[in-house]
Length: 198
Image (cartoon, rainbow, N blue to C red):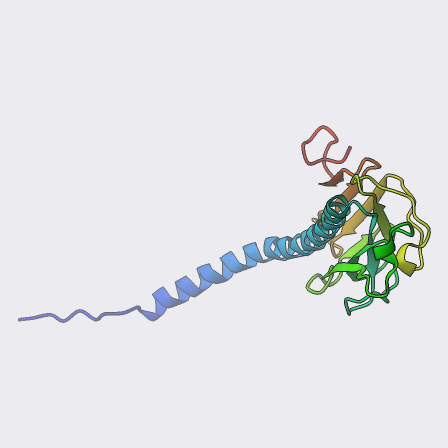
């Protein structure tokens, strides 16, 4: 006589599997939420650092003064003004009054624009509205470059990027030295740590 075995899962096996899945989800969810908050801050910090390095590279490539500034203008044009709490960034070439080609009507000043906080809701960015780089890649002082409404003053600059509040949030800091060194660091780590702030 042949005995037939049933195939598939029993109701008990299915309930055990669902219970284990629910427990694993409950344990992982707080870590996943924390990871998302910190990833948002990292996204803003990376965008800020990339824009700043682009401005510095453009200044060296063109041997011209170039300004990096934060703005709320969503269109990439020459009419944007600086805003320290801006959600966008812009890189512009500062015309040299001594060069004839810089003073023509068709001189294009805006090099590139970018977004800081489109996918990073709740991230706070604090720092100066504008930084100017000279043709040697170092910071330089310029009065109201390209009419953005603020002055560039050569000084060590600090930008603090804070994720949305949470007990396990990890803020980041970006520093720009007078010599033009652009560095991202973690203010929560020791200054002797490779990625700690000095």
